[in-house]
Image 1 (tube, one colour):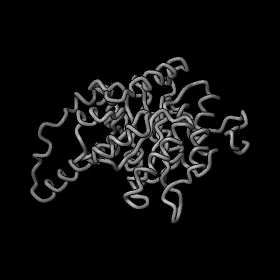
Image 2 (cartoon, helix red, strand yellow):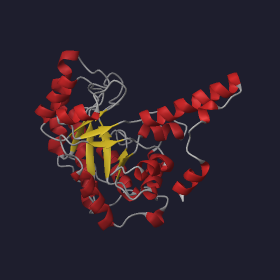
Image 3 (cartoon, helix red, strand yellow):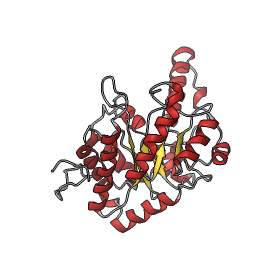
Image 4 (tube, rainbow, N blue to C red):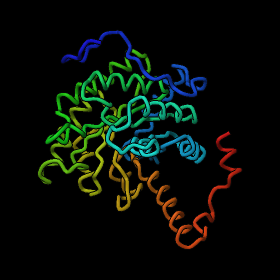
Amino acid sequence: MESFGRRGTVSLMRPRVPAPLHSETRPTRNVQREKAEALRALHRPGHPLVLINAWDCASARILAEAGAPAVATTSAGIAFSCGYPDGEKISRDLMLEAVARICGAVAVPVTADVEAGYGASPEDAYRTAAGALEAGAAGLNLEDGGGGAGQPLVELALQVEKIRAVREAEELAGVPLVLNARTDVFLDAVGPEGERLDEAVRRGKAYHRAGADCVFVPGVTDPAIIAALVLRLDCPINVLASAGSPSIAELARLGVARVSLGSGPMRAALTLFERLVKEVSERGTYSSLEGIVSHGAMNERMS
């Protein structure tokens, strides 16, 4: 494959990507295109798309059954469930296999969290985007964290090239991807506190110009900063919700277009498991199992 230049060109030789599991349920290109268009249309400032992120087929099925119009994966949740810490320690192939299983488990659009693209180069971002499309994804997250030792964020020009590489992959495949470009300025507390808003806006504007559909700024809970991001970026904005974040209604009032919960739901499930382990080992009782979904109901859901 040729290296990417300033225009983000790439040879027509497609990269090898892992064959998706559940391939018999993989959507056709027309269906996948419709899913991407539907996902993009859900990004409406003031009427946010709320994504309670899934980490496996069971959690994705629960979301779809509850009426979720789309499913987002959590890279951290998938990594944890596969025995890896977060931060691109899991391989591209393993992550995309998990994404493929989730895409095959639900009929709604799936947007895949692929961290920073599993490699430092635009070619790596291209391969990852191509693999996400092969897996059946309608969208993906691409973050700018992990720039290397002493550099918490990827250099801006390089990140722009990686975003363009994602667009090259979708153009070659003939299937669109809803690209959610994430900047970790606030999440990683990069630079002086008083300069973070300007830096997040600078990066977000560049990512949007390069082709991102939505700009994701995790680590922000202050309504005033969220409102400033919405106003100054002037494109769909995604925020990460956690305990202490403004409510969905408040985020809607601020003009947010997308709200995601990241690995929080998976960690919440593991918290219940930890409580059960402690109760059984220390007290010999099982009250933590009260009110849980029945085996039959879960079995039927997975059928």
